[in-house]
Image 1 (tube, rainbow, N blue to C red):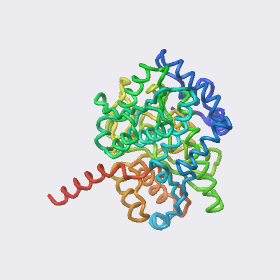
Image 2 (cartoon, helix red, strand yellow):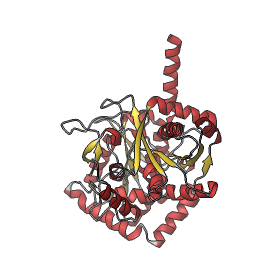
Image 3 (cartoon, rainbow, N blue to C red):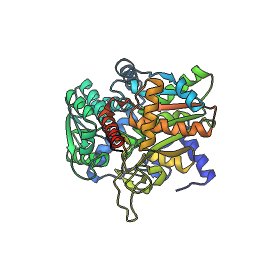
Image 4 (tube, helix red, strand yellow):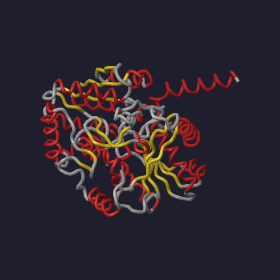
Amino acid sequence: MQIDKQASEKLLGQLIRGELPDARGRFGPFGGCYAPEMLMPALERIGAGVRRWLHDPDFTAELGRELRDWVGRPTPLTPAPRLGREWGATVYLKREDLTHTGAHKINNALGQALLARRLGARRVVAETGAGQHGVATAAACARFGLPCVVYMGAIDVRRQAPNVERMRQFGTRVVPVESGDQTLRAAIDEAFRDWVADPEGSYYLLGSVVGPHPYPYLVRELQAVIGREARAQFIKATGGLPDVAVACVGGGSNAIGLFHPFLGDAGVTLLGVEAGGRGPGLGDHSATLGRGTPGVLHGTYSLLLQNADGQVQETHSISAGLDYSGVGPEHALLKAIGRVEYVSATDGEALAALRECCAQEGILPALESAHALAGARRWAQEHPGRRILVGVSGRGDKDMPTLSQVFADATGAANRH
């Protein structure tokens, strides 16, 4: 879906001024609230809570204290000189991997847990893919004494075992989902079913800028701290803005958090990097913005990976956090108006970028973040001598079982030959 130039300029202006989403939860043609009737009162309560508290001085002061004293914000902006020499660029990394629990997910989980407490929730329900949102939610709920249950696809339970154990240590019940594709989409389905069974007493703490209104807006506002910090830090470090800001995109929360404060900076290219997986075939990747078509998934109208009959398809990525059939509606709009460029990186490119970052900078990024690094490296080769900001959404400790298996398989294959 493409939008003409005049309409695109108008929509971008509305985004910059904070006028989108509109009262119906729409980002232009995308977004909205497609939910079962019995969930509408719960969504309306959350929406009312967002309007009442999200920008209330007492709420923002408490959130700010917790982000500083418990999460560890602001996170550093780290120069990456050895990567820069390899790429022929000036490279800075926004280090969300250095937050408490190890990823950007804690910004959103903390804010929503504070909101859930104000709304009088008796328990919290959540989903997780890579496990980082689950860990962040489990930690935030432990912080505030809220019982928590997290749904996680059975495939992800196996490939993200360290995060499963961390959630359990925080007192959260982790429920493996054996139905559907057994990854993030199935986990979201089960979390919604749980919420439908108890919409009055449960708060659904959604982990990305997806789902029915007000979640895409709420999560964006909580994650925009990333871009606000990075923008100010980059100016302080270099005297100006980056030429490009790069982030990986699954559901899209870390990317929207980095991008949103830069939307009004016309000279800053914004580059989102999706999971190219094994290749371009349907079911072999998770490149929703590059290859998806419009439709409704998990309560919002956006782009999704579906077949000609409208059936949502299974996806693939070596990174569990990018392994999702949809994407946030604000990203769909940013693609349609041309403000953000979206590309993809394959599993192999992400693994190579991870190894390069480890060897050159002594930083082990999450496999999700490695996709951003791969996209940034390619952009640097096409635009030599530029200043590059890369969002490192999380650390790679959680990925060690996957990495160990991949490298063991590669070693075995090499030995056989």
